[in-house]
Image (cartoon, rainbow, N blue to C red):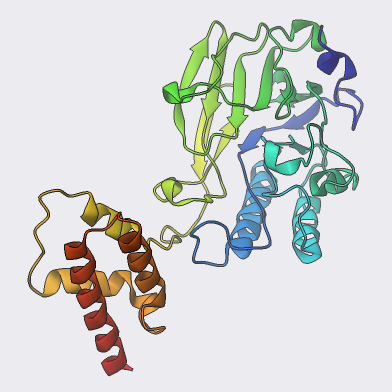
Amino acid sequence: MSKDMEQGADTFEFAPCYLEANGLMVVNDLHAAPIRLGRRKDDYTMAIVDKLHWVIMYANRHRLIPLFTGDFFDAPQASDNNLNYNLQKILSTCWTNKIVILPGNHDMAGDVLSNADSLAVIGSSGIVRVPRHSGPFDVFNINGYRIGVGGTPYGRQVPKDVRHMFPENVGGVVWLTHHDWAFGGLPDTIPFHEIAGCGLVFNGHIHLPYEPVTAGETVFCNFGTVGRTSVDQMDHTPTIAVFNGDSLVPVEIPHKKDVFNLTGRLVKAIEEEEAFVMPEGPSFLESFQSFTHDMATSNGVMITEELEERYRDGRLSERTYGYLNDLLEKVVSAARVKA
């Protein structure tokens, strides 16, 4: 047995509560932050707060136990006390204090969660449980099934056998991970391995969803991020997973779809088209105007800088650079006329 497993989940004792519930609700990678992340153009902080509020209200309505698979925060020490207060206040409205939040790599400044990390502070409040090491967390009564729940924080060793960790009356085990599993054949990842005694693994860390993978008796699931922190996730639908003992149901979280500033992606699409023919007529101009409407009032500064940078470093041909500059001038002029 590894040192990790011997230490157990040392922020709370493993004392099965057998709480009655209608299901487990799994939430991946919230990435709460007091600043706008990546190319998000909306109020990212408020969007995350709203999502957490919806998640907890959904858990209350359906009597579900929330389980977070890591990266609750985007940075170990969230600098905004107001954000921390709002998150903690929302969590405190949950019908149960048996919520588990697994530490992810973004939650920890070091190899293990420390008392200085924001997630540990929330864990000390008593409204949620935050395990610092790999091990069993609890046993719940889910619609007549006794389900054991455990997990492995980021950077810890995932066990290969959990049968000895839970009481004999447990009918199944769900394990939480924040791990580089090889979903979709991703490079530099870790091969799946069966976890004896565990039927379901819910994984965070990997931000896009993948089809479940079976290794022996263990099924590995990855539903993707709730936070959507980068443009590659623009088409991803933030989803929770509800496990009721018999079935696993994905539930979409209400969200805005158009939240990314795509400046530069249009340029990249044009420059990569070898046989590119400059489009004529008003339709392309109208599309470009729609794409740049929020920048036009500031004279297209953001797009101008992007075009110049790509032209200087050779990523954009002179022909395309000139065409897009001319087009941008038309957009800005049109915006001025409307103003």
